Length: 598
Image (cartoon, rainbow, N blue to C red):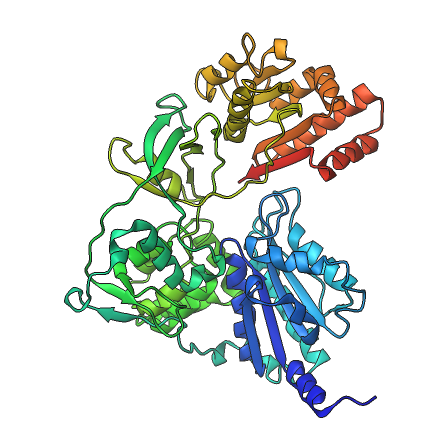
């Protein structure tokens, strides 16, 4: 049967349209997706749509002909929040092997090879699309934060292959494909944001200005870079009531214990305002310009992206600055830009100071400055033990760049400087973490060196509170730090629960095992303690224990996993392959959980 005229028109329309779907947690995938869209438009693509996955109806996917997916991976191989609904739809059992027949797709992933499940979300998506009948335009691209040029080290060659393959597939899709990488044809266009300014005497007072939650919600809604988060303002404004240093004063590591409680509100003031424009979402009426910048634009921490330098070049009046910026924005200057910018953690403010002739309009700054993203910390307190409080265990971040410049983490440094005796209110978003809370009847093997102990302090507090009302299962806790005297975090807490009838006491079948890596000539880590307690670990595993690992994403998770495999091999008398399968089976049923961070 021949297609109808409407179907033919629809097919022709689809064949000249490119859909770019992204799933971003911090903004990098969104930035990469927007670059895909810009280059496609430069190549003459008749229509390009760049959308967040949570803004697209997945049931419409079969009607598309060319789709590019740009997907980041978070945590232990998890998809970004904006991808979860889309991914659940793709896993429906009623979608057959031909559901996406006729759809041509390409997937680019953003990840970090320092994590065990590197680019897991992108890899799973690519396989699932193929299983549903979609055909790859090019092989999956895998961006790696560990690459000397960051994720763009893989994105640049991948895009070249994508445009070549798409042009060979359908020349009408990219009629000017040679223009994409022609530097002489680069044009700027108009910014997506539109700003209207008001003086303070032109603006009436609004109730929003007296509510900090509404102020933050309004500012985040106004930001184009934060629209993909789709999480609104903070549901809680908590007051800091404790700021305690856990490591010894003067040591090279500053780890703090913070206690936050009871939402409250504070008064705001009014002067210059920023108002919504046609392309800046549905905004609350008006907000202070300074407040908008402070709450949405990461001008003093995150490094600007490559397109930022390209736009700067259009507004540079000094010729040598223009040439330098054009070089940084070119493929030839990619590695030098990475060394200058990301490796040195240069901020938006620092880059603008380095190129004083650039007078970039505020509309472009709004569009291009990386968003001020939320920082995630594990809650280290039990709601049973502290029903009106949240405790956090935070390492105050600082590091040296390759050129020996000291950099400081934005959020942790801010928290450390707050005085709990004053009215300091913290905007908080509370989400369920990747470590599911265990049932009191489940035995636990907890491994948390350094600040990885944070969620397990909450677990132990919770179990201690539960023992008052019901029997609880044993808990083994393995903690590691450098020195017993300098950074044994929560020392008194652990020792108290390891005594008498405590949750970690031997009388309860539990145990506390601490590795001090630098208190003796030979390094001792948590994996060594696990192997020392091989029989106890195995007996608890046989009795149905769940294993939880938390801490640094570098070597620790792999080393701990290898130690557990050795325990299984030794005590169960099996080969390494069988021990690995044993742990994978535990993971599948929710009894092997890992939460790591950089």
